[in-house]
Image: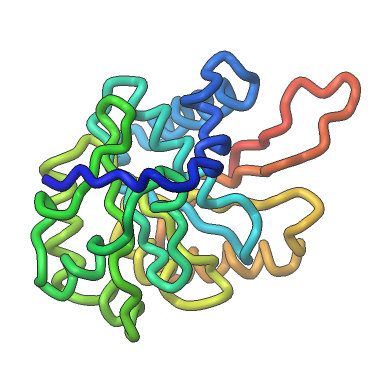
Length: 232
């Protein structure tokens, strides 16, 4: 099990509010999301979760990281996977070196236990994207991916995939079709309504279970009790 740490920039750690300031309102909202996910399926355990958005810049990676943290804080063995093999960012968030990761596993160069890394947070491990491959969609749609997901299910209580935006490439749909559920992140004042609806339709087309929609970065007005909306 690798445990490399990049001693360079740590600026992205500021985004991990669930770890840096667990008493903050936003951290509490992430815990609410965790609770809602746990209660979203009565007869099916939600173990593998895809986090995506309609477009870029809506906060899906920050959401995925903070969700992973609150699951780990609840005592769940949690794995955060950077499944955006086109524009990976998880290694920046946790100040890791992205020399090996998911792409290396899917091309059978490495095993999970050889490339998974400690996050610095108890019970949370991170799998970076690895070297950017020429064919991310094909890798995500491969038998190797099915085998990886099965191994991750056996090794962790919760596996969260940070996936590319739905409308940009097919990667998120491919991944969502293999997992237990999907979270769609929508950023206030950034997301286009029609594109958000189209993203939802594309996810439903692959028969994924949409666990909910997170409205991110909404301006708080006087009298507002919440700035996250959760629900389909």
